[in-house]
Image (cartoon, rainbow, N blue to C red; front, side, top):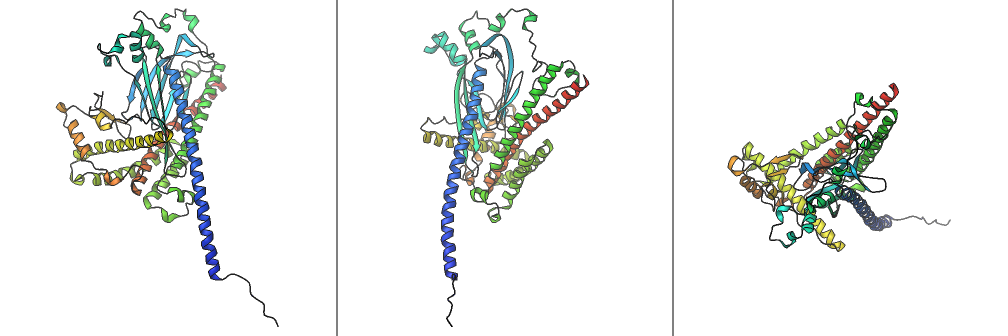
Length: 493
């Protein structure tokens, strides 16, 4: 009887095969990750550039048509450009693109927590949710052009400088699947034409003031939007009942457009929230079953990230923000103890002083780190690197070039005043000394911080994104309430 030869693999052969397969799969996975990263970078860059150019185009179109003497900044702009509020009247534009001479509309821009909105008489538009900073400044004012300056002898040149606005917009987007961020800068300038003509001719009268039309001739009937109802605000039944059906239908259509726009922005924000790295990195982002890569803190913040992404009501977002704020405040006490010698034994007043200084030092560190990233990107693209930004501590203490103000905007968006030396128990010298005593060296390089700092920064980023999302949800809810009210009024007519 013949012996049959058994076929199969030995244990050694199986182990060798597994080892070789692992090497091949690891190589393939590495290539796949790099390809995905480059695709994500390219998408983030194109999206960000498109957003910022849209913003720049809106600003150029609006600011060149500003009515002389109406440009105001009631909310001002923060030292680092993270918040801004400007209003002005602009000459209306016809469908053919011509500037009207007899009609203006009020325009308002607001920037807060990365969310930039433009509100006019007829619409409220979300322009971007990715603004890192935006600054609009006059190129030069009359005080900066002395009699000794050659340029001041040319009236037209001088007027052009005084009526010119410089616009600097910095955008930031998370690159999906990584802790990297994409930055882009848009710079432009525009001359406020009405302001320019006013300065070049002392006898100049604005086109608006020259329009001597009869009252009946300038009353416009707009079926799509009655002038009494500005977009973005809550309406009331008494006002709505004064409108005809066509006007109500127009108002309803406008509110529906705003709801659709808000929902699109919420989707975009949710994607950005999901892309916020809470410490998992690329590997666990693509394989979250690897729980051993996560720490308790990162798991906690990751859970809050998921809750924030899924939140669809004001109360849900506020609840997540409360938990994120509790986490960051606890961490700030720990970080302050590491950064300030003897912090734990300080009085309550001293701790408050150091908290203010610490917040400014963190902002300065982030601004400087972001600036270095922009410099690297500019050098890579063969462009001129941006100028170094002023430090918030210099602006806050009145030591920045051209700055006499002693206010700054803290991390919560609040304007904080620093009193003068002569009449304050907390002087600018004390604030600067506290700032100088804070050592953030233990955090390491920007964007290469220890894991707990990365998780903390992610939580701060989520707070900022959550605030922006809350604002948009409030706008959406208000518009939905307006739609329901309009429909009730239409049904009862």
